[in-house]
Length: 99
Length: 497
Image 1: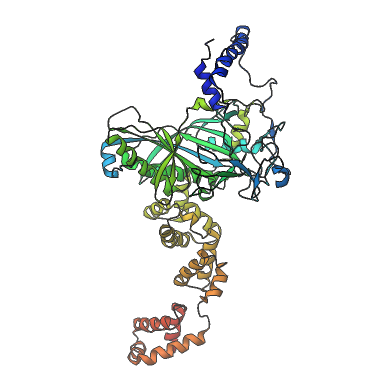
Image 2: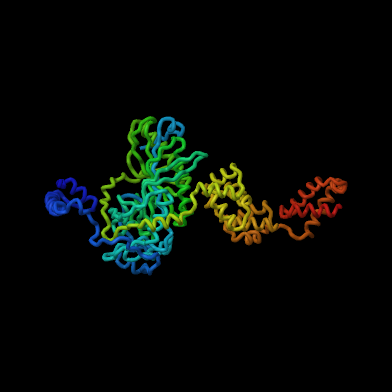
């Protein structure tokens, strides 16, 4: 199992919008490696005949009928929003891509 | 940095392009991809939302079976293989258009893969290879407030409406398309156009580019002629008309060539297309796929379409476009030349719908390809978006057949229909366009015309019926074109018999 580098942790923190200073990176990078090593021990137990899974129950094709169900009212939908304007969620300035 | 644009002729002499098209199709299911909210265009802001599509804690998504069915039918129509087992994946990113902070998509296990679509440009057929078609969900709609232009840069804050968040999308991705440089813009346009027609024929989407139910991202790179390694690509997002697809390819080819000619390197980035100028501008630097940290969606179980289901859906596919075209040409009795014009104008589905309303094929062809195409070109829109429906064309032709109006007046009726003045009958009423059906005023006009030209009356009496033309012309002028010329002729000949 290759080690997670300090730079990789900094990059992941950046992607996850978590602001980590140098001291925190020094502290957390080795901890994450300990966790990864613990999880990696699973691959020592699982043989080639055990495929990785994303779901604990072997179900497939759980589909919903294409039938409309009641939505929330705008008041309900917006009730937890920190700020509302023109019946929309008001969010801070976005720097990045325009959709 | 100011851009140097190389004229298109010079670009194609020096470089070969590689195109890649990603087309997003919004499905016309009743409900969203993972919840029972209505999948409708528009609506009062934040009224088609629920805990699932708002990403509230504890809400669980469930896949819309109808959307999976549509995805499989699209895949089959594009000659794809259908996965025996595939999963959804989370595409993680922080952007408020998805309240969950991820978009549910598919990553390395698309529902459909390895297909193709043949497209025709100026009599040549190009096979476009389809890499994959996968299921995902649409995002919410942001409005940027403040700043000078209403654009994201310089905005003070943004307002988000999540009605669109979660509407089922199918993303169709091509393999690199390598065609002769001079054909690249037209092939890109033809591919998106034929894909749209196919989607319409499948009935799985409204397929309205102007409303965003089909959106194209255009990837383009250039390499010097003879070079086999592909150049660095740019990705122009959300190109929303066929004409814009063609223009975006053309512009990017000129822009890339300008950078490469100057010895520079093209930046791998997303670009925004501007309809008004036909240009693109820089969006953001493209992040690597790994940056989205895709992982299998643990809240959804895998989709494993049985082969029986896939074959059953294959049986529901519409006729393939090439066969359909040949069959309709035969049925309608169009010449090869007529058919080529019909095809180039994208008029075939419109003519078919008009014929289905009871219009003779040649009449339907005449209105769409001669009259309405000119108007669409003048307005810079697609024929289907000219503002007249097949049903309205059929109504107008029925009024011509009933001699309520003639072809010349019909053109004015189309003016009124495009201007939104109501039904054909209402336009005729409002504009006073009906032909004079009463013989009285026609006879009066004939008398007046004969009195003005006494020598003509003598010629007609003497058996020179062709001379009636001059009288008919005068009557048409007097009635401002609202006379039935054949009836006027009959009346003249009766009168002078």
